[in-house]
Image 1 (cartoon, rainbow, N blue to C red):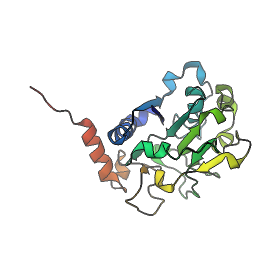
Image 2 (cartoon, rainbow, N blue to C red; image 1 turned 180 degrees about the horizontal axis):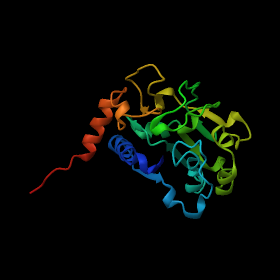
Image 3 (cartoon, rainbow, N blue to C red; image 1 turned 90 degrees about the vertical axis):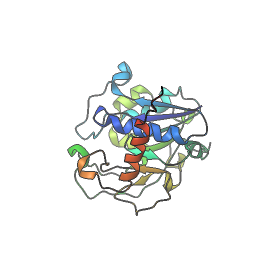
Image 4 (cartoon, rainbow, N blue to C red; image 1 turned 180 degrees about the vertical axis):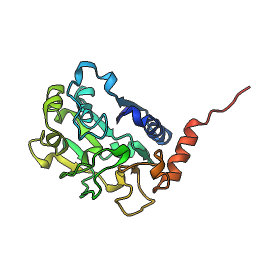
Length: 225
């Protein structure tokens, strides 16, 4: 069973559903998809919301290894994405030498705000944590106590690891940044990081038609007599 955790924010509920559908529709192995939703975490996650957080899952993403009992491999991804490939092909990249594997973007956004007026934070390793392939047994530092108390930079810059040598790399095709990366039709995962077609101001962005088609397929329900 492949384990995928998706960040959930009620303001973008439709994006979670479309992403989950895009994964299930292409998967060739059983996939367990779990939303990381604040209302389901109870006393596991207790930290107050930071004004710089753009989503409910800015920090809760790092609970993925804990929610996986620190066993096996799990993938975390933001909700503002669609997957265009078999998710098994991402898990096939798992390398036991590493604690976590990511697309190592060299990305410094120029804008000050993004979707829903959220502040656009700028820091080293920006967007590395938006798709993470976790080797859960090597991520035992990510206890609820640590995730509740560590700074945002400690979490997103992987300071919980003994060395950056424990951060492996996955191909760029698994985290294509719309509006930043050069247009490319041969990618496995599309990331609407600034804002996606589900917001009026981004309805014509790259891959917008494909997102709407994915939603249409998801919503289709055959009528049977």
